[in-house]
Length: 474
Ligand SMILES: *Cc1c(COP(=O)(O)O)cnc(C)c1O
Image (cartoon, rainbow, N blue to C red):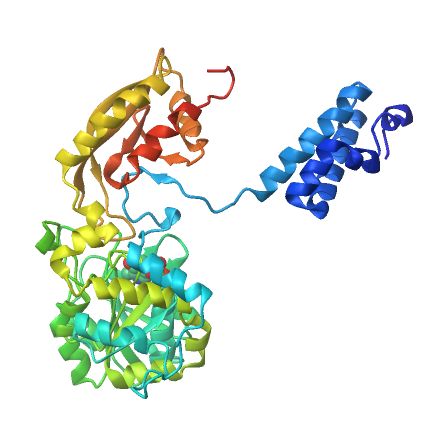
C-alpha cells in the first residue's frame, strides 16, 4: 500500500496465520468462516492504515490485538440495528419510536401468521372470505357504522388511494386551514399532486365558510376533502364548515365528502376520562362518504391505514391497481384483526390495549413508580446528577390532540456541579448508551424521564449498573 513503510507492513501477520490461531478457530466455530475472514481482513486493513499514518505499533501486540479487534468487528456487525428502547419521552405515540405497542393477543396472532400458511385470500367455508380485507372488514364496519372497509400500508397510503381513485386528473376542494403537514414527509398538497389531483384551496387560514366551498365547485370537481388538523390548532377568530353541513353541501352537488381523520379513534376517549378525539363513527354519522385513519395511532394496532365508508366507493378503491401495491401483509392483518377483536369489550380496553393503558395511567401511579425508581437511579448516578421526582405533562403524540396534555410524573436528572453547557446532553447520551437505550428529553439543563410509558421497571433498574460516562471511568 502506498505510504506504508515496507518493514512496518511486514510486521503485520498474514491473514492465514491469524486464522490458524486458536482464538480465530473459536471465532469461526461461533460465527462461521466467511464472517471471521471478512472481519480479520478489516482488522488488518485498519492496522495497516494506522501504520501508514505513522502510528507504529510493535509487531507482537499488533498481532494479538488484531483478533480481538476482529471479534469486536463481528459483534458490532451482528448487533441488531432495530432494537428495543425505553420511551420515556413523554410522548405516548412517538412516531420515531414506532408508535403503538401491540397487545399480547396481536403479537401472538402476528407470530402465528408468520410461520404458517393462513387463509389470507382463501375461502375455506364458502362464506365469501376470499378477499384479504374480509378478515377485518366486518369488525371495522361494526365499529364505525360504515358499509365497507379497506386496509392498506398506512394512512398516507389510504389518503393517496382514495384521492387517486376518486379524483385523478380532477379537482379536490380543501379548506386553506386544513393543508396539513405531518412530520415533513406527509403534506396534503404533495399527496394530492402525487395522486394526480388538482388541489383547489378555499377560504383563509383561519376561516372557511360554506359559500367558499360551494363557490369552488365546478365541472372538474371530483370530491370535497376534510382533513383533521391533527398536529396543530387554529384558535381565536376562526370558522370551519361543520362536517354535517359540508356533507350535505357535497351531496347536493353529487360529490363525495372524504374525511382524513388522522387518528380516527374507534371509541370515545371521554369514556376513559381523556379529552375528546373525533371518532370514525362520528365522521361516518356526520355524512362522510369515505373516512381514512391510521392503525398505529390511537387505535393501538400495527402500522396500517384504514379506509371506511360507502360500499360502492370502497369497491372502486379495491379495483385500483395501486391497492395491490399498498395492501397489507398477512402479519399485520393478523395483528389488526386481533386488536379489533379487543374493541368488542370496550370497558376493558385500558387493561387490554397498551396505548389506552398508557394514556389512562393516573399521575398518582406514575409518582409512586418514580419514587420506586429514583433511589437506584440516584445510586447509579452518584456524584454525577441529582435525581428528583417531578410532575410533568405527557403528550399523546402522532398528531392526536396537539394541545391536550396528560398530567404525568417522572424524574428530573440535574447534572451535578457547576452548570456546564452540554452536561445534560452528556447525561442523555449515557442513558442512550445503556443496553436498552433510555430516551428522555432535555429541559432547562436537566434530563426529564417521563414514566408514563415505563412498563418494564425491573428491567430498567437492572441495567442501571451499566451506566458509563464518556471521558473518565465511573
Ligand atoms: C398521521 C396522519 C396522516 C398520516 O398517517 P400515517 O399512518 O402516518 O401514514 C395523515 N393525515 C393525518 C390527518 C394524520 O394525522
